[in-house]
Image (cartoon, rainbow, N blue to C red):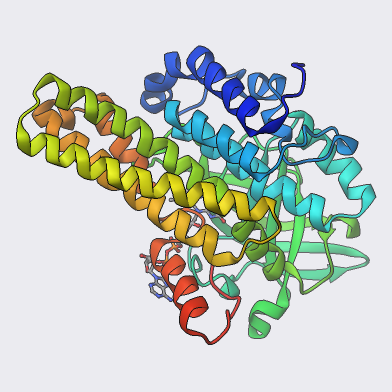
Length: 378
Ligand SMILES: Cc1cc2nc3c(=O)[nH]c(=O)nc-3n(C[C@H](O)[C@H](O)[C@H](O)COP(=O)(O)OP(=O)(O)OC[C@H]3O[C@@H](n4cnc5c(N)ncnc54)[C@H](O)[C@@H]3O)c2cc1C
């Protein structure tokens, strides 16, 4: 295992070197083959990226929000699929177990996540509930000290190979958010199955699946936090992870900008220079907002809107710059294997994941104009 880096700058350098060495050479294959190569998780573990933000006591690598943001940005510049896989693992699986788990749960579930022996997943979305997370339909009931779960989860990243899934179910849908609890599920549990792997527009190497839970029996200690606190845990994890997903979008925006700049240098006519300048302004705005959100989070001064505005602006910048890249590349940009096309397809997914653009706008609008957040939206 590599020695721990300290400080965001050291983590960034390490991630940049890793991306050049291990990811960039296989980035096109990840997209084409729709999978991250075997061994990538182990390689991320050797660099200790899988333990970022987790204290050494639980075998984590430590590191603040700026360090995690820097690593995700650098990885995303090479492959958005790899960066998002790591971001989900850290922010919406490992982190909530750290924050809400008992020491016994941290020992059993967090330690293997921090070492990279397992990859973490987060299963909230369902076929009938995405943004409106309070209305999930996956049910649980108590049975002799156990919990028994039944339902379907949709768009779960990392769940095929995951060792640990943080999954949300309701005791009674009529209770809306107050009925939801969080459970830690291992994919091998009887009754649990991956019913389909989704073929996506972008982030193709990141595994996204539909899960079926058919009378999945979990022991009492699979409950994370208290009964009824699941929606709060889910929304807290998503809010905390938003700087990370914004950093992934920023990395894609940077890669798209570099591709665009190369194309404009080859043919520096004025309309292309103007588009390049516009892209530079979009990228600069995104970079500043992501840095500010991470800095405020580290200073303990963050508010939900900091990360929301960073995610909103960074994902818009990624889509806009990548779209300009396709436009300027001309017909070759439309080829499935063209870098500009891949960046565009990857970028287009960021306004959807971990809270859509409209949901970020809703969060911001509520914060700016009141009434206070009604914590029901993903
Ligand atoms: C690649 C990928 C990976 C994902 N990984 C995961 C994962 O690991 N775990 C997980 O749980 N989920 C995951 N998701 C699901 C993702 O979080 C949801 O797609 C997202 O929350 C939106 O939910 P939805 O798709 O049901 O769309 P809907 O909520 O139905 O939204 C459809 C449209 O309506 C808009 N809309 C909805 N409500 C409002 C409102 N109140 N006001 C204004 N506009 C609104 C939305 O912005 C969107 O444009 C993933 C999705 C993708 C694409």
